[in-house]
Length: 397
Image 1 (tube, helix red, strand yellow):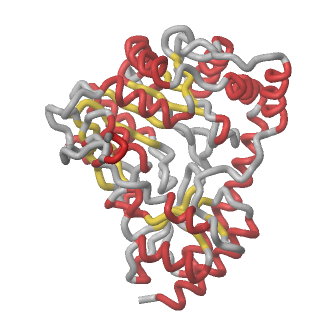
Image 2 (tube, rainbow, N blue to C red):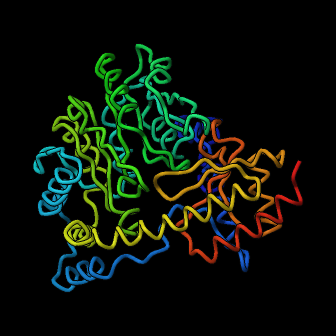
C-alpha cells in the first residue's frame, strides 16, 4: 500500500542541489532564542523602531476604505511609478521612463532576486564586496550563478576599490553587486571610488546591481547614485525602496530601475511568481514619496544621535569600532576577547541578554566583528553598552 511506504525509497535526493548549497541564515537563530528571554535587549534586527508616519498609514487605510484591495498592474500602480521616477530625478539626477524602466516589487529583497535571475546564466560569476548582506550570496546561487566575494577591512573603511574588484574579474564575470550604504558595516562609497569602478564596468562590459535601499540614511556625507555616473544608467540595475527610510518594513514595497530590456525580463519572472506588490502598500508608498521627507529627516537626526553614542561607547569599552557613515549599523571588532564572532554573540546573549549578529553571518571578512543596530531606543542602547562592558571585562583575552 502506498500509505505504508516512504514516498521515495530509491535513495534519490528530493531537495534541489541549489537549495542544498544554501546555509541557514546566521541571524535568525539568535532571534529565536531571544524571543524566549525576558529583559533582553536586541541590537540585532535591521529594522527601524519608529512606527510608520501616520499620514503614510492613513493613505493605505483610506485606500482600503475606498475599495483598493485588488491586484494592480504587474509593474505596479502607474501613479507610484511616476512618483518614483520624479523622486529619482530630483534626488539623484537620473531620469527613468515610468512605463518601461521601472518595476514595483515586494520589497528590495524581491527586486534583488529578480535582477539576478533575469541576467545570470549558469556558471556566470557575480562579484561583491564583503562583508555583505546575507541574501546576496544565496540569491546568486539560486539564480544559478557563482558568488565571488571581495574582502574589505576596517582599515580601508570597508570600501571596495576598483583594483580589488578587477583582480576578481574573469571571462565568466557577469555583474558587480554593490550594496551601499553597507549592511552590516555602515560604510559608504565615495564618488571618486565609484567613478573608478564605473571605468572598470565599462572596460569589462559588466552590469552593476546597485542596492541603495539606505540612500537617505547618511550622516555628514552625500550619497552618490551609481546610475547617475557617466554612461552608467545603461549598465545599472538600481534597487530601492521604502522599508528603511520611511519605517515601512512590513509594507513590503520596493522598486527596480533599469534599462527597459532588463525591466521587461524582471517583469516576466515577477508576473509568474509574485503578480504584484500589495496595493495597500503601494498607496502608502505614494504618500511617502509625496510628503514623507520631513519624517525621514527627523528619523535620520535621531539615528545620528544614537550612532554617536553607540560608536563612542564601543571604543570606550575596548571594542574598536569603525565610524559608520550610513544605514543604522555599527560593526565593532571583538578581537580583544579572543572569541569568534559566533562565540561572542552566543555568550553575550546568554550571559548579559544582549543580542547582536555574528560578523561571520555576512561572509568570512566579517569574522572578528559583530553587527549592532542602533535603530533602537537610546536608553536601551546605553543599557546594552553597560552590559557589554561587563561582558568584555569578564572575557578580555
